[in-house]
Amino acid sequence: MGNTHRTSGDSSTDETTDRLPEDLQDPEQREIDDVPPDEELTGDAESQDSQISAGGTAGAGGGTSSAGSVNPDSADGSEDDSLLATLLNGVLSTDDEELTTEGAGIPPSKLEEWSKSGPSSSPKRTKDKLSRALNRSSQLDRDNIDYRIFLQGSYKNHTNIHGNSDVDVVIQLTAPYRRDSDGLLQDTESVHKNGQKAEYGFQEFKSDIVTALREEYGHDAVVVDDKAIKIQSADSTLKIDADVVVCQKYQPTDGPESMWFRTESGQVITNHPEEHYKQGAAKNNETGGNYRETIRVFKRVRQNLVHKGRLSKDDAPSYFVAGLLSNVPNEAFVDNRQERYARIVNYLDANRDQLSSFTAQHGQKPLFGRGSTRWNQRDAKKFIDELIWLYKNYYS
Image (cartoon, rainbow, N blue to C red; front, side, top):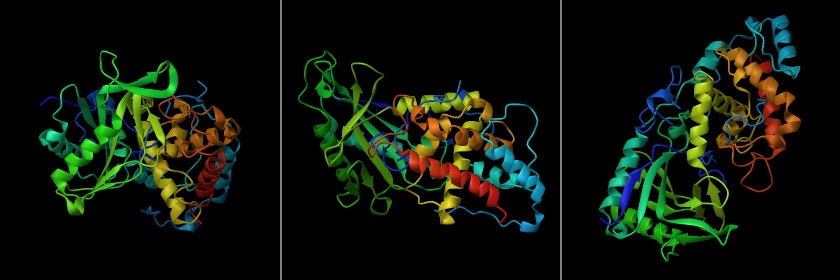
């Protein structure tokens, strides 16, 4: 065949231009074959919710959840008040003294339960089946065309909390690639490896991918949405649904390599899935494996709050929750989960007026701003308030 098909071992982005469809978002599992063993630490059983990508330590100074039934009478009021005073005082505790949390707040057993990975149904096998289907297609048997296919989202990032949720797959045209035209950012053109302008680019590639997938799975199974191509498991041979984002390699004049695509509605999106994954893996190592499991905890906390009617699921998409936590200093991610929760919420509450300095996990763009590709600070502050409320009122 004329194309070179490479499988990526990196990338991730769970939920709008910086995110792929929920959790390509917001938009993670052990089965992923291309995750280096040294990034899989003890305590990280799994490791978005999709979409597309944010920056490790910027700002770091440096369905429904089962909420478990707990007897309200077992809570000690004085200890609860003491913990809340610590939680609400807006100071990040860094001493070795453990918070007094016995009988108050979210029980350690519940936090441990919420930290676990959701069951998975082989996203890697789904990706491999798609890869074989594309290799069989004559549509992609062209000279000077290279592409790669890789996982993205919560399965890739080891933060999935659901089993059998959609698997997020990226199919990226790597040659010809995209670059800024005449040095103008975002004014792009498709070029061959030798720098000559190419006629073949993103739109032609996406059309060929759609044709190839429909040849393999049938027309009805392959639905082209605004951002992604959805392959329905019920109408195909796949075991689980797949959200496929087709994109092109993009090399800006100033900045790291990223991905570029245009939605069906005409919006141009660039993102940094490789950097998103790399920064998340680094922070997980730096926190002794506690970062990814903490993302799972906070995603389940969000579910709990949505179930209680305290939040809408759109208030805190998974991709943004991960971005928020990526800005919390590593020293807050202690082993004791109750203390960790308190330290993290302490930091976020104390820095609610500095949210504009927070970056996405990949570190290339701000987490907050105008438009559909950024989180708004109002919703983030509401989320922080609800994190405090749940700890205070878990027993009520």
